[in-house]
Amino acid sequence: MDRRLTREALRLMERHEPFVRAMVVNAIGSVPGKIGASMIIRGDRSFLGTVGGAALEEKVKEHAAHAMRIRRGELLHFDLQKWKEGGLPSWCGGSVDIAIEYVPARPNLLLWGGGHVAQALANLLPALEYDFSVADDRPEWVGADRFREAERREVVPPSELWDRFDPSAFTHLYLLGYDAVKDTELLRLSVDRFSGWIGVIASAAKRERMLASLREAGVGRAALARVHSPVGVAIRAETPAEIAVSIVAELIQEQHPRAPEPPVRAGSEKKVPVAR
Image (tube, rainbow, N blue to C red):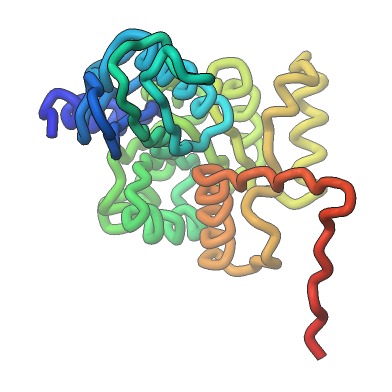
């Protein structure tokens, strides 16, 4: 195991950056990269380590870029035999299987409003290793007694939130506030300054009033389209704990997107027996 790769993987995970890890998991015959040879490919396509170099490594980089796009890994087989159909331009003569692992960016949530839903969320996130910070303009709602596992707890008005926090440090912003006016103010500031995922807990009426206010302030359609409300998986959640579960379920779905169903060829349909 390469300590440099381990340190780099941990660094990227702590920075909430996605990456791909490629590893030789099987080798037959003469190959440059033995079992366990690994490399990390970052989102900007820079890399660390090697699985063997030359044409093999370039192919692995291509597949890593594809894995970053579709957010899913795969197992690949390569023949290092120039004379073989489909083989790489290599005279080594062996073959390798390489596992491409997509490692998603671990969520880092900023919760505006330290109320009941935020506290319920805070009880679920640590077990998933999802980082979070909480901000509110009411000191009694952001204490360590309510958010012991928070990375940061800040008492700050909405107008100063992005002066106190670095927007690029977070993947998700949830507006869980107690005041529609303050939520709207923060939402207006955030659609311009925060490039991540924005979720708002609001009734249908509150949501429409907030969006109408932003439109009147000149916020464009593309920016408004980034606002997600309601948030969470539709499980008919009502209590703060249930809403927190629905939000976490949505985060998990985002971390592990479903693979597309393979196309069904004509004449290959299979009937599924119906239970009686």
